[in-house]
Length: 164
Figure 1 (cartoon, helix red, strand yellow):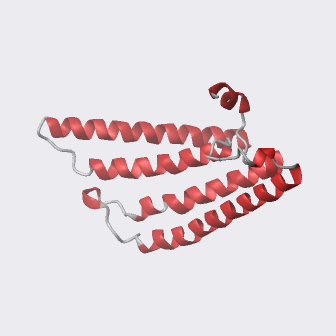
Figure 2 (cartoon, one colour):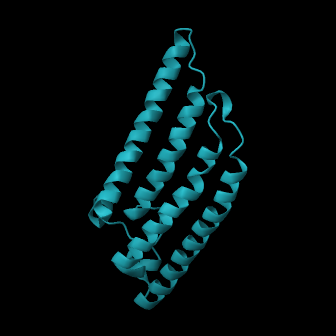
Figure 3 (cartoon, rainbow, N blue to C red):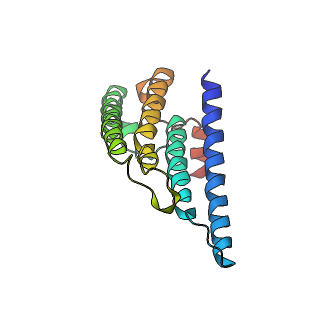
């Protein structure tokens, strides 16, 4: 089941990124020929924010988030477990706050129109709590699949070693 979910999310992120690029291309071309595309910038903003949150979730799901562990990996395993548990706990708390206050923000922005496009600004602000919810799900999945210490490690360490 998760395989299809992961592939669907990746496909959606690619489609949204392509839509962002296409919207900007059409908008700038239309402006250049003297017939501006009203709402092009707002539509591109909408598509891009959703691309960004899906991309952040995909990155977290693969363990590609930014981490500085030069000191931590040299510590005893028990201390690594404690530090990683603290980091994961803080991440979960932060994501929970984003979810809670993000839904409040989206609800308060629902009546606000988004420029010329006429879409509700709530669709843009909804990306924050939905993205945080997806990231929380990905983090929980990593915890079950890889354990606490492995949850924040990139899936393919060979790529990291080759880059060094």
